[in-house]
Image (cartoon, rainbow, N blue to C red):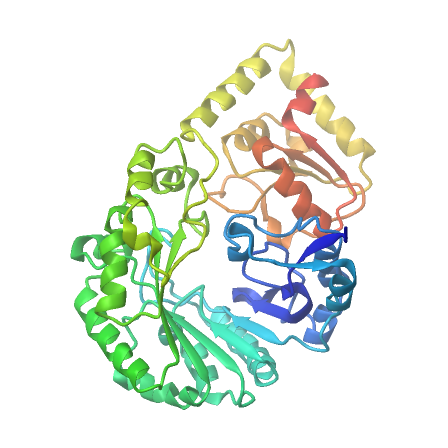
Amino acid sequence: MKNIKKFCARPFEAIHLDPGGNVRVCSWTDATIGNVLDESIEEIWKGEKAEKVRQSIIDQSFVFCRSTSCPCLENNELEVLDDSRFTSKCKVSEHPKHVNAAYDFRCNHSCPSCREKLFRPDAEYREKTDKIAVVATELINNAESFSTCGNGDLFASESVMRMLKEIRPCDDCKITLETNGVLFTPENWEKISHLSKYHLTVVITPNSYDKETYKYLSGGHDNLERLINNLKYIKRLRENNEINHVSISIVVQDRNFRELPSFIKRSIDEFGADDVIVKPLYKWFCLSEEDYWFKDVLNPLHPYHADYLEMMKDPIIENPKVYLWGARNLHLAVKHPAYRYKNLLDIIEKYCGVEDVNQKYNRVISNYLHKSDSKRLFLYGDNAISKFFYSQLDRENKGHIVIMARDLRKTADRSIEEFADYKPLKGDVIVVTEEYNIKYIQRDLSLKEFEGDLITINSVFEEL
């Protein structure tokens, strides 16, 4: 029997541009392989970080991939190949064939699942975004396909709109434009209507057709009527073949999941959708652990979970035009984040039960620093546990300790470093206070070629 392997072409053929210039191979990996403001595309594309991501496909570990959120992994849709065909496909294209230009956060909505308020870019952000757009334009003009936006709305971004007016891809290029639809007016379409000569897909993301639900999910913006008019206009463009494919997408969550059957029916019958994409809510951007817990109805411990499962039995869910992007895949059974506060209390109780605790704690930290070539120690996790232990350090040790986090909260009272900016030095010590995330932290640090000591807060206790 031949050995078979799962293959994903993205690391070998695709590139994703984020705000700030960071580059990934696709939207569904956290692995940054470079930054277009610091390096050329050729350096990034052929660099060691990109090769590490490709190696994770070759060795079948998929260690940098998000098993939840990637549609191919969610739905087990990766191509399955025997050894010889797999090896022949694991070849890096000369330049990226597929480009996702998601480099601008600007949007006309402030959806609670995405951001707390409308994003207002400063002059520095605009300047960087325009520089990234130049790189994106060159990439797109040599690509077989490209998409935009994903992190914002293309019609709300002067930079993206200018790029779309200026690009001139090859004639057989496939284009996907994603928008919430509110600004997809005849006037704005006219600015980019030259794209109709290509194979063009438009993805609209309403999330609800109920007035109050829509207003809530868009961040308080009361423009559903305008969206409905634009959806009818988009339908006419589709009927006239100016658009080749129309997808309407919904992110199911606590506020809108009961509307899903009627949403599907109206999307197909009234707005002529070629397909309806049903996504579960994933934790990203500004969502706190608590907010995400309340919204994630795929969590078996959510109070609405049984209702969600019942709703998914509706016959319309089986319509061939419905694409379930992980909407049937249950998430981990996670208790409310309040249970983590109990963990904090348990740790503090353990801490307070140690005689001469402050003296011993500072001595342990000093020993870690003494062994460190870099003389740097990080507390990984911008949370109550990190804050508590940072507060117990004496002045001498505080000067060497930095709290590191992926998602930053209010940090004016202590030194902080965003994980994306972290550059490892030999001998760095990282104490993880988010022990439930240690597998992902190890994965992300390996991509940054971290060679220091990674320990848990409980390991520190063992030395007290």
